Amino acid sequence: MSQFSRRGLLKTGAAAGVIAATGLPAKSAAKRGGKLRMGLNGANTSDSFDGRTHSDQFMIHMGHGTVFDCLTEVTAAGELVGELAESWEASSDAKTWTFNLRKGVTFHNGKSFGADDVIASLNMHTEEGAKSAAQPIVAAITTMKKMNDHQIQFTLAAGNADFPFLLSDYHILMYPAGMIDEAIAKGIGTGLYKVVSFDPGVRCVLTRVDSHYKDGRAGWFDEIECIAINDSSARMNALMTGQVDAVNRVDFKTEPLLRANPNVEIFEVTGNMHYTFPMLTNQAPFDDVNVRKALKYGLNRQEMVDKILQGHGMVGNDHPIGPANQYLATDIPQIEFDADKAKFHMKAAGLTELNVDLSASDAAFNGAVDASQLYQASAKNAGININVVQEPADGYWSNVWLKKGWCACYWSGRATEDWMFSTAYESGVPWNDTHWENARFQELLLTARAELDSNKRRAQYAEMQMLLSQEGGTIIPMFANTVDAASTKLAHGPDIGNIWQMDSSRLTERWWFA
Image (cartoon, rainbow, N blue to C red; front, side, top):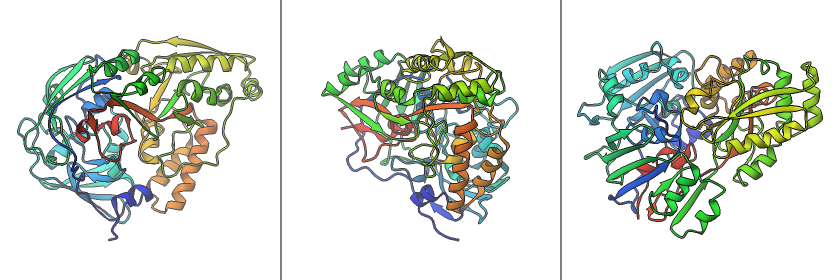
């Protein structure tokens, strides 16, 4: 079999072969000690340690890399490495994958980690009634065979060159077999930190695990206190006054004050995070492609980037593949504000004017309400009347998103194209927030997933991006840089991850006090 470097796998998508994954490099400057206090938004009173339900930053950060682990991990430098898996091997058609698990790992309750835990943890996502965003990843596995306590073989329904990447998904946490309900209730994982207390929507207090398998490579804090601060102004103030050591989602309105504070460091990375306005295309009026096109042309994207992102990002083109993806298609015609084209498509839909509700809350993204009002103003010039419905922040993801016909949303993006498409655009998956159906798109999704020829894959993904841009039900006005901030007392390695916020949601394990 051929050998592939970890970075080579990320760049080419080629997965047939043997990939060694030795973990994170040692950080010579890192040192143990101290209590990290984080102020995060994205917290809800319904939060739990059930990884299947994690959808926003607070619990994503408390999940993988903190209380729990995944089988694989994408490092801050963008390399795919093993977490609870040490290495893996694929058949030439990328349908059969054999994973070697790390030995000597224990859960916080003392139970040893092994193949049975992997099988039980993955089965959670496809059991009856499970509403997991990772369901399509796990459903693609036809059989899971325990070779021995520390080796497991997966057989997929079809080849998937990205399979090892998918197992780093923050929903696919490893739980102890036979006691999963207890592990969810108490937060029992194999992560660097164990739960001292957890008040959903308020705070979580953690303490460092002794004799952890990542000792000397990660997990430098003795304690962690994660405080829910959903209000942007309060979150920024908490950092500036020293009440917390790090915050996510910098409020661009107060960014100048943060930059003027000598005790604060702002860290900004360009990735695939994008702000969206998904519409349920199985509901009127969004079931008419001409209505969707009218709404696309009724938006001034550059104005939104300038006023909402304050320049910290770029214009989007109604597909989710971003600047950090390998197969971004840069030659797709850019959709721009055009009142005449919007009116043309409204007429084609049999309408002289369009009246629609748009639900929004800053829980969706910083400035979501302001962005919706900007949209309202530009669309009015095209005869589109948008009624902006301001929704409560608490419960937004459970009561509004996937429920209301049109709403504000954000996606962190994913490391690979298939991961993004299969999470949010594959037919029937739980997080398909538009219910858009297109036979050609679904055909290409399956074909590209198993394709190992990079040039063929590029063409297939380009066509998929074009289809979404022209006909899809998601309006993606902008890609946003990830802008977070921390006390200058904190230190980190040379790279900061760009998959999710806060160093790909692994600040708790990668950073330390200088």
